Image (cartoon, rainbow, N blue to C red):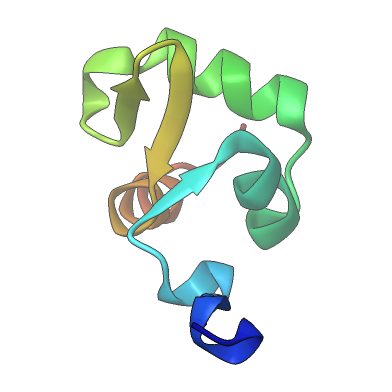
Length: 74
């Protein structure tokens, strides 16, 4: 086995291409601070845009976009 066959080629997706975003990715994508995003997610946990992966909080990008569209202030 040579060196090139053991190299993994992974496509890096841009945040706009991902289904779920980490809080850090969502903060950059939506231009909202990480603390505010966590607070919004915790206060609206049943809104359908929060996905917990163990203890890691992810935001479903499309669902959160719809939530933002319907919100006049955050």
